[in-house]
Image 1 (cartoon, rainbow, N blue to C red):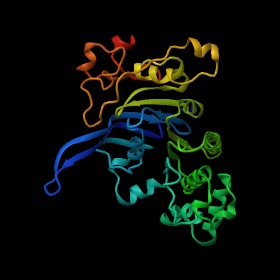
Image 2 (cartoon, helix red, strand yellow):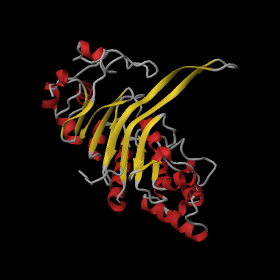
Image 3 (cartoon, rainbow, N blue to C red):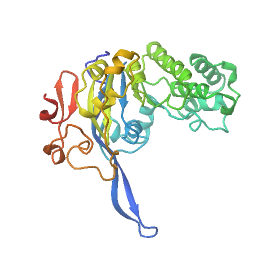
Image 4 (tube, rainbow, N blue to C red):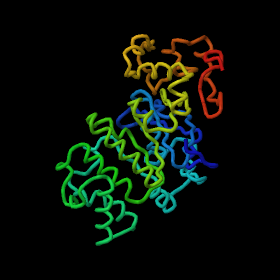
Length: 331
């Protein structure tokens, strides 16, 4: 696992609420969707931190708030010690060159009216990095890096397959030589055969360019393959964070155990005797989360304390963080 004295990114008590308003003429604030609710984690230079959880748990909102695509409600995001949440204007614009995102849907994230050259070259123009022949050379270099024909710069997105479109998105993210890339479920909308190609490309680029990833995904086996550490989210909160192998072999939080039990094992003998943890009920609404531990309404190990006291997110062993009561997990 990549290590460093100081993390590249430090997220501290990050909160992002979306207001709920009612009324057409006299709009009034009646509540909040608590998409991200007091999240803290670090990302070290050169590593890949995987972020997993059910649909609607807040994974994408974490990534977008980290990059200031969404304004945080409160909390801090430190990039090399500089607080992004306090930056405005030119300072924020300069820092954004070092942080990029690969969006989930390659069909929606590329402007159909723009050529590939315009899409990949747009960051270079916006930040005044290159123009003219220098810009064209850089665009062709980026297309070649991601495995596309450099002479496709005058083609439009509809002329490419889904996997090729996602490679165009990767090229656009690489244009400004960033340090951090948020990969927001970059393979979820692709065919299985193409998913492996895109993941292999991301790993190759990480080694070649020294990139740092926040990899958001649903596919737990793929996250284990690409990540150094994993964070598990449930209803706006991180419930467990540890080394990827530690999460798979020794999960502590009941929700993490349920997730890991759903990962298929390619061994008929092991699969036959493996115990699945089936969660009952539906995930509660983030607009009205349960009191105490958010997971207690579905937790098979829930006790009375879980419904009233929100567990402390704590380090139970070196590098292994859990948000669960000691009497539940025995640590």
